Image (cartoon, rainbow, N blue to C red):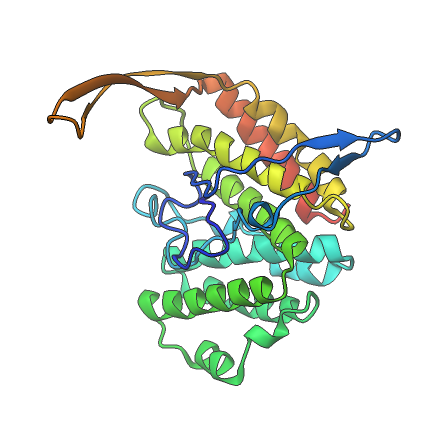
Length: 298
């Protein structure tokens, strides 16, 4: 999942779920009080707007749509939406359903995508985002021509409306919760779509590269632990954090670049996050475990 600053207007790109872009390079330190609850240190406005994690429906899963098989069984059932009664669960599963809608749209599964769009519309009223579903947008959803391109356009417009609404109202903790739900759902779908481990599978390396993105997501959540539900979400994500901690950063081999000075050739070493079959299977299991926690309302 790509992370972009609040001021960046571009959509999260096709590889957004699997690559990291941290704009501004800010970090946040935490102190711990006597009750062992992490408290964020004071942060600047730039730090507060560094991370923007909502996935763009236009591009989500596009990097692997030709390499994975669509499976409706991986989606979080829309029937669960009415069981989410507290703010945390509603915001997290709003992100889950956005990811599910994007997944269906990316594979041209219009009936599923439309169903999840309707669920998002209904859920939006519960978290103060009902204004994004204007009469014009609702009419488009109800009457869209059933082809992949038109549905993706509607989904993408909805994404931008959500983005603008959250930014306008400075709802950073809501962004954090929706982002956590969307990230977990995306990774759940991706890891459970990989049928066999291979160290040559680029999707598996992308899963490993998500360690950086996930770490940044934790930092962003950590900036808002004074808001209800955030500390609980951080605890929920702990099993994934522990699994990613097993993945080392190693040399990926030599790389060649051209220097701006006299066209010199510079030889260096690239780095990559290494993952083996055991660690992939552990990460996949932990992601599935956390996804169940976040979507089962228990």
